[in-house]
Every structure is written in structure tokens, then in C-alpha cells.
Length: 510
Image (cartoon, rainbow, N blue to C red; front, side):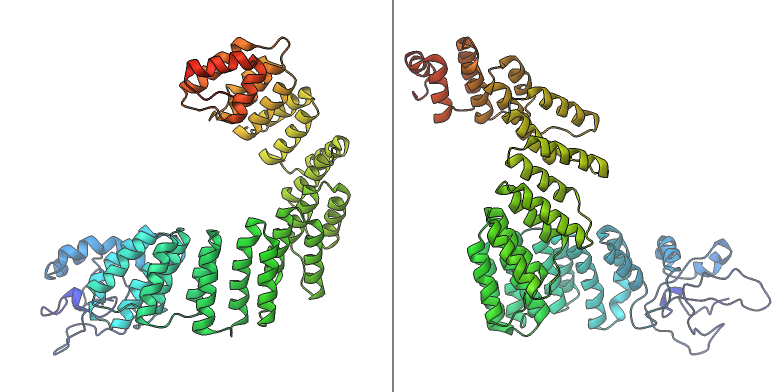
């Protein structure tokens, strides 16, 4: 029997109840092995905090004396789950910390929240630093999952507990806002951090990376400059990562001039570029279609004993495709294989595109069979490349066969591909087929209407009444003709009738 003056909820840490006397009472479940006095202890006053467990009905008489019986009943399921924890933290952290950390690392905010709510009443007896660790763990869960709003909610919990946030608190809140794409909120937290303490390199790098991912060059530059003024350039890995993030902005914009400027700027300050840095510069050249610049970046990379990655070769082959240099595309593809790298569909597709751009459909079809033999799926992008090539060549039979293959392999057409098909039929004046595909567009635009209108003009004879009806339908859908549409209408109807129709419909004349 438990001492009448003690309460189950007052024991420090997980309780391990012993059998008392000769009676074989049911033992309460032990969550962890702790040194706890057994039996009645005269004068013993255990410290308050830990979790107590209601084990089973046999013990209910003893538990009835506990003033927290109702609370214990609600917690029994939770505590039994926690019973699987190892006593890794010993007495340093509140019980449940390991489970909380587990859910936080799994980015399971809701599960972590349930554990946190169970722990909250129990952490009152711990030091401020331990309480802050518990709350910061919850903020970490929110940050890793990109849940900025919940992160702010747990920041408010610090105020409720009368705790001061530390560098990690602000760092995770900045990261949560950055991951959710809210740069303004991330900057707000950064400013609060700067008011309370000095930001470190990680905080600045998070801001630079967030701005880079949003394509906000000015802000990325600004935070880079602030980092240099505040903490200088002393951490090679972080400095390189920050430089790469800024260059990535220009890579996405296809601006090799600024990308190389920042590469030179970093090198002048002894920031060592890595593979990611050079790949970003190479990508900037590739997006602009500058094959020579892309190859030069690769040579610089190799001269520094940096090994190109699959992403590097993908950008390089893509540069070859943009200029229609299929021979070089194949050459770099083979180089990729020679390096022991395994190409994925993007590499095969880039080579295919290079042959299409060079208007060599025979070689393009050869690469189609190569891709098929690898078991890789061409996908929507690759199929669109081939549909465009066949349509441009006026081979709509092959277009239809390819579309049939897509349907059998469950590759769904999008409006870009459908627009290409409409254009192919319109160029041939095959308006029935063009109309059939036009009706399959999910979102009809001025471009789609204009393309079909062009088909009416190329039909023999020209389908003038169809053109009039199409313009009226277009207006009924709330889509206004643009100058290209009106010029196309004039070619179909003739200047005089087109002008009169526009006047009747209340739209500008061609």
C-alpha cells in the first residue's frame, strides 16, 4: 500500500511501484528504471514533476486516494506509449522529451503537439533553459515542415511561460517563414533577432537562400552584404553556400554576366567555389543558349579538380539542344557515361531535343527507341517535343500515333501540347481536326482562338462564317481579341468585312 500522505502525481520522474508485503498486488507499469524509495517512507517528500501511470483495476483502490486520479486516467494511454522510451536523457530533461524530439524530426507537428500539451503542466518545475528546449523543439517541428503560423503560436508560448527566446528560437522561426516562401515574415523575425542579439552566419545564410529561391536578387544581395558587415567571411562552407545561392538566382534568370561577376567577386575574397557554384554559372549560360560559355565553365570546374555531377551534364546537354548541336549533345552524353554516372530521363530528353532542333527527325526517332529500351518514360515534356517536331513537319499522322501512345501509357495532355496539335492542323487548313482538339482545351486563351482562326483562313475555301462565329464566341467567353487576332481576322474576312464586324461588335478595328 502506498503511504497515505503521498500523491502519485508528486513522484519525481516515472514511478516504479513495488509490491507491498506478502500481497502480490499488480505492479504499476514502469516507464524507466529509477531509484525510487519503496514502501512507506517516513519523512520522505518526493519532488514534484514526472508522469504517474494508472496501471489497471487491481491498483484502483490505491489510485483512488490520488487527488489527480481523473488526470491520470486521461494520461494512461499516453504514458504507456512513452513507456517504450529509453532513459537516454536521465533526469536532465522532462519525461516525454525523447518522444517529442522523435515527432519533431519526423516533421509530424500534430503528433508533437499532443506530446507537448501532455508535457506542458509537468515542465513547470524545471529550469528556464529546459523549458526553452521543449518549446524550441516544437518550433523546430514547425520549421522543418514549413508551418510558419504554428511556429509563431509556439513562440507565443515562450511569452506565456515568461521565457526569453534564444538564437535557436529565432533561427527556426526565420527558417519556417523562409520555407513557406514568406520573405517579409522571415525578415521580420531576423530584425527581432538583431534587436535582441547578434545574428550568426546560419541566420544570414537562411535569408540569402530564401531570397534566392524567390528570385529576389536585390534582397539576396542585401543580406549577403549584411552578412559580410556583421560576421565577415570566415566559414568556408557557409560562405560558399551563400555565394552559390546568389549565383543560382542569375542561373534561373539566364544571366551569365551577373553569374560570372559574382563568381569572380567571391574568388577575389577567397571564397572557394564548389561544384554547385560552377553548375549554377554553367546553367546561366545554358539558359541563355551560350554553349561556348557553358563549356568554358565546365573547364574551369575541372581545372580545380571538381567533379561534374549529373546536374552539371544535364545543363550542358541542354545548352547543346538550345543551339541545335546534336553532335555535341551526344558527345557530352557519352562523357557522362564515361564518368560512371547514370543518366536519367532529362539527359535523354535533352539529346532528343537537340536532334529535333537540328530538324533531324530520323535521329530523333532513333533516340526515342533508345529511351524506350532503357525502360524510362518519355513523359509529357518529351512527348511535347516530338509532337512539335512532327507538327512542324506537317506529319499529323505521326502526331496522332504518338498521342495514342501517350493515352495508352497514361500520359495526360496539357494545354501546351494541345495547342501544338491545333497549330499543326491549322497550318494545314484541316479545321475539323483543329476544332476537335480546340474543344479539349481546359483553359481557352486568346492564343488558342487565334490559332483556330488562322486555320479557317488556310482552309480551302476560307471558312468566313466559322470565323465570325468564333469571334462572337470569344467575346462571349470574356476574351478580348489582341492585335494578332484582329490581323488574322482581316486575312480571313477581308479588310472591309472585318472592319464592319468589329464595329458591330464594339471592338477595335484591325
